[in-house]
Length: 326
Image (cartoon, rainbow, N blue to C red):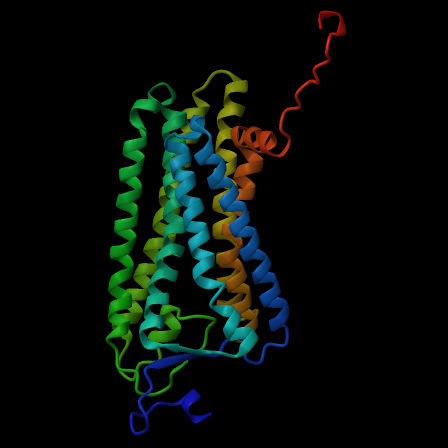
């Protein structure tokens, strides 16, 4: 047990960390069951959504390129977080190598950051569609959307690579036990046996930027959308314009509300058990990727029609032979 708690450099070299979350959590089996269901539904829902978008040429436009991007990010988020928890929670295989830990840290934060930026891209698409409906096809072309998404991926990569590289250079000569369900940035860098105040400032600035930066942009787009819609004379057209934003609004709420509530529960001390708080945070982060394809499929008329045709193919009327003509 000493190797599970300390590393002082005097014994055999240890180049890894130990995940300690849920070690004493009585409901760990129920948690892994819930996360397994979330992961399966995430894969099924998003893969079906991607298949429908790829098979229908009528959906090959800028809006659905952004939807495809969100679906890929959704799959990636839960594929990084959930599968690695199974050996930790079920089989107590909680050791993770140094390199694997920081690789997991980068990709986990990269794709969770991409989630919020992907919602911002969809907000941009709705802004153009409502404020410039006649020029939408020329402003928001497939090529332009592609380059916007490439730019977002590069931006998030640059945002994430610095704090992770900074944390990987710290000396970890004391505890190697990560008080989390995976190699999160915060629970790892605080284990360093040196001053980590700069790392803390970088982490705080990065978190504020990737969470509230896209959210601020989304609020700005909806302010402009509301102004544009109120200028429309027809009440019917107003309702139609707001209806096109409803799906995106639900996606934003599903992503931000659980995360904010989970952090408030922890910061206010309403949840005192670290394992329970970690469980709530994990479910909060992994639920939106499961719900996003369901919301889009149910709230988007084009997708509902395609899914209905896929599930209920049109019946072909039976042909009757005319004996008199034979």
